[in-house]
Length: 273
Ligand code: BTN
Image (tube, rainbow, N blue to C red; front, side, top):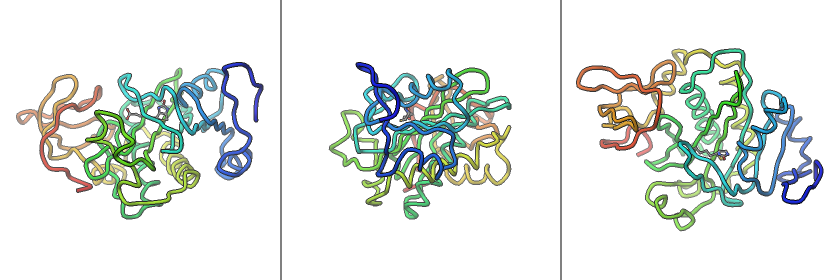
């Protein structure tokens, strides 16, 4: 075990997925990696590390989370052995657009999943969901931890069957295995995710360039659908702006949505069906 055990305080593991922690740090080229059997939330642990000065791309993972956090204060189901629950720290000198980071990390997660499961075709549902076949397979929670400091949490469902999801999720959640890709190795997925994230957020761009915008557009599952945002704006989704805002056509006027999620949706899926 790493660190000092105190009653009720989780202790970081010496080894993860069969290898010493330091091997993963070297292998992934990251300054610090903490792995736990159980944590309340990897984002919460990383926030503590960030406040103590942890370096860019410090990474925390846990096999299970007792209080996994989703967007808007929702609970994120994070049972042991079922998925990849991981957080990494981004420190940047640039101004952080709250809509851009989740989109870039959504791209990174989609690329990582596709590397290991080429048939998967993950889509991005603005602002922070990874979808497959119209179901949510993963989510991203980016939380500010001071100026230019972002705790990025990624949850990817890997092994669940439909029976493993609680009420309210059965109808809309998915896992990599449910989508037909079996035996994905969690450490390989973590490595692919960190490497893709590094190439997209290090350094953090101010905007999506032309090619990233095209890739986001290809993965965007909302375009062409009728949406209603949490703030009550209803219209047709027409794309994602260079700063990550959702573009909604409201009776011929284009609204740029930068806050809240999308609550009600009608229309055909543009990807993953
Ligand atoms: C969402 O879709 O609402 C975001 C879900 C984010 C879940 C991940 S799991 C790892 C990290 N730790 C947390 O407590 N939440 C994020």
